[in-house]
Picture 1 (tube, rainbow, N blue to C red):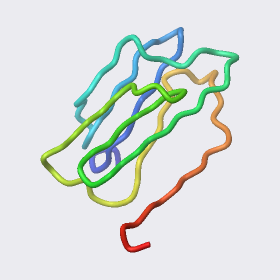
Picture 2: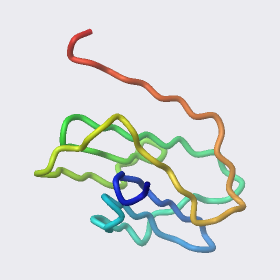
Picture 3: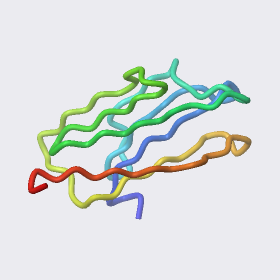
Length: 98
């Protein structure tokens, strides 16, 4: 399914870097961005139409504007380091119809 989606891959001190993939193709990379061990982080992903942004601890890490529309309401978050834990995850949806 990675061939049909977009996702962020976030590393740690052991394997630094943050990458954004679309349809399994790397479109953005931030080699100096990563999550530190033993520290809680807030990760926020915002998607509005063809625009997606990744913020870690309220700091903008990636900002991508596509000329091809994103399809579906799904996103993925992958960790490069198996020692990191993810908890809790909150998803908010805002619709212009609301």
